Length: 238
Image 1 (cartoon, rainbow, N blue to C red):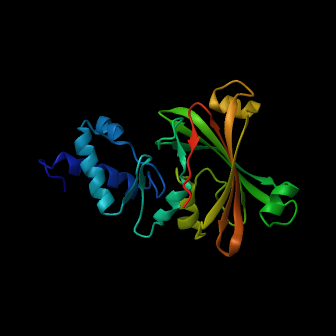
Image 2 (cartoon, rainbow, N blue to C red):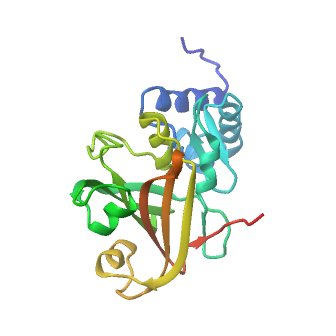
Image 3 (cartoon, helix red, strand yellow):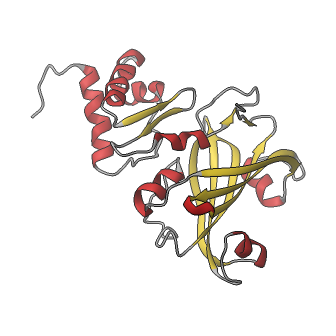
């Protein structure tokens, strides 16, 4: 039952809870930024921040410093955020919203099947996602998965959140343990150039990732390409 004099921060909390409870936002999804939420609900950014902070305290949300706030859950493995290592051109953390633009079952090449520990010509799941900053495309991901490990993920009805690994852990029960990455530079092919809205052969950063689950088993082969003038990769060595 709604109270007529409910504080605005509670109205904002109820709004976010409603998005989560209805499934409009799932674990791994970015929620609206504080300015976006304030604009949507016609409240101040301070009020929006208080609502988000309260839901972070309840562990319904997880704030990733500099990158945004994600839907979480009591059992959510927040260590997955160590795989989120992108930034802006100056190397500063930035909020990158990702959208899935293609997914399909495809016959794996011999090289991909061998890397994924599958028999030759095994069906693989291909996923393409574009990363946006302020609604402008700055990166694109091309990844391949063992289709038998993630059944149904090829269907558009299955929502893929910003943090894809959250879905892999929660829906399929597959732990994401570690990743090996190689960073290089290259020029855009025609498709990537069209997605990133640059001319063909424009310099891009190329990040090749191999993702592992338990027992040292490879579950994903991914290539990410980012605009050199908009995108950076950051890692920490200890």
